[in-house]
Length: 157
Image (cartoon, rainbow, N blue to C red; front, side, top):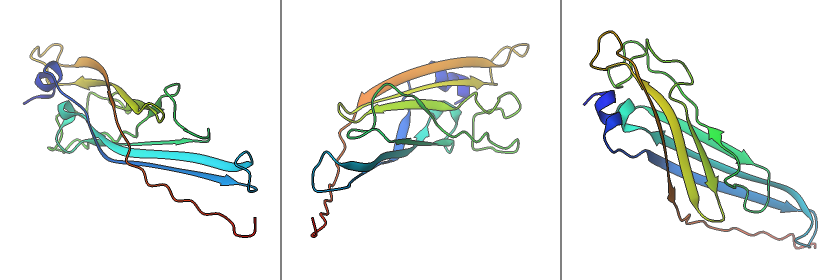
């Protein structure tokens, strides 16, 4: 199956190794004394049109307590174009640029809404005069995180 054929059919991105971590430190026994806060999210994103082993690493950090992530900010995934001799990808490395296939995502911790958008090009079109076709896709899903909460309290407070 070619990149163009897969892009024209119904497909879904796959997010693997989804990891969420947050940390809130307080400067005293009151929960209103937040000293520092951070949230971290990472996963590998796969677009089936781009080949079976073409994953992008997606990372995000947020300093906004207490839910950390809201749908107001898009984060860009890391994109590594395949080498010209790569046979594990449907991409034509000679016709893409570094940002062509970089995906973006956003996440809302409170609602569990997770959204992805991506633009990509396929260089295997049927017309030899215009072999490159551009695609744009976006989609979303509601996810439920199964989080473990660890609480440590300073015994001297």
